[in-house]
Length: 102
Image (cartoon, rainbow, N blue to C red; front, side, top):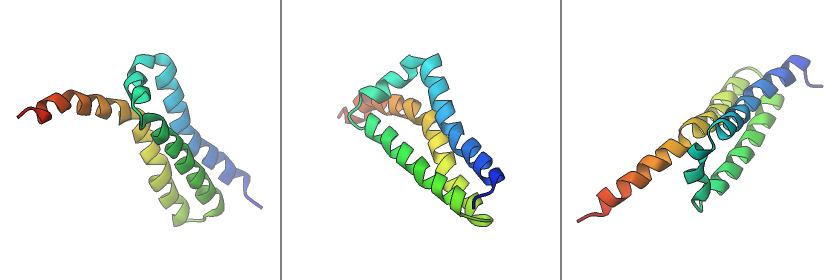
């Protein structure tokens, strides 16, 4: 049986990246448009959801340091993706013409 506190902490830890993405998408949809137009943008988001699913299982089934490691390895990178992913993609696209010039 899984503790109620374990379920609540897992929902909070794994729900934060999803809430962050939804907030940024609906408050500023133009920020995500370059990411959504790229052929690898949507597969990256699907991969992030799968990554969160694995992290949810680790947080629910793990104990002690495994839960802490699961939070750091699974939840934090997806949170960073939702905050920095489109910005990094925009910077890479802006540097493309500079780096390809000979």
